[in-house]
Image 1 (cartoon, rainbow, N blue to C red):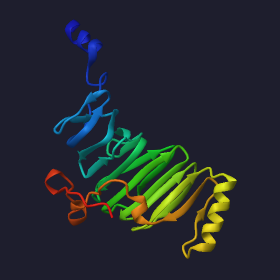
Image 2: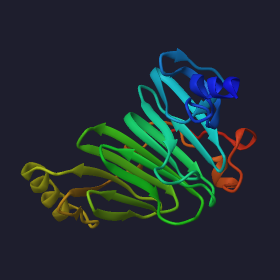
Image 3: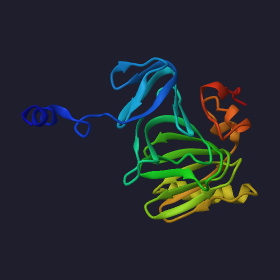
Image 4: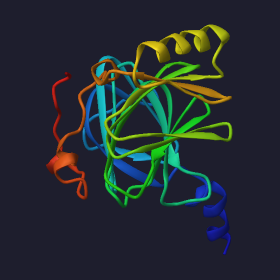
Length: 228
């Protein structure tokens, strides 16, 4: 009994970071915390991953694939209250995710949340430009965007600049855009959606084999496209 009690005190499964979330498929100038990471490394609950200039990191999680662009960082964990949902908190740069219909993911950025709008195959990109501006591209499947109690849908194939708590200057610029474009901006009390071209939205290559077989994202079915 004394030995068992001692083992609990020095660290049992509940006292350390023991929950593996996924495996690194590709790493180039990428890190877990301060340690350089390579393909085959395991990603655990609460890990902070990042990339240098020119770097990239691709992670496989059951029913999900995450690709972090250059000069980007995020923290990966289970969403609060769920052992199945993955929460990727983007703190800088760009993240592309590919989700099978069974994949459950939410991307957090500056208190905003982006997630698939339905239980369907989804490929999307979220870029944190600065604490008050995001760029979101729904390559496949629609997305749901939420911020401080308000929400908006990003239709498949659409890309938006999203201004959080927009200023009067940004609202005026959006009004001018409304008059020049057939696709109007979407204005909420807490955020502003401005339509942008897909080529402008894309910052890193996207995962395309998930498009061909979205039910089975994984190392044997991954590839990249060229940036338009």
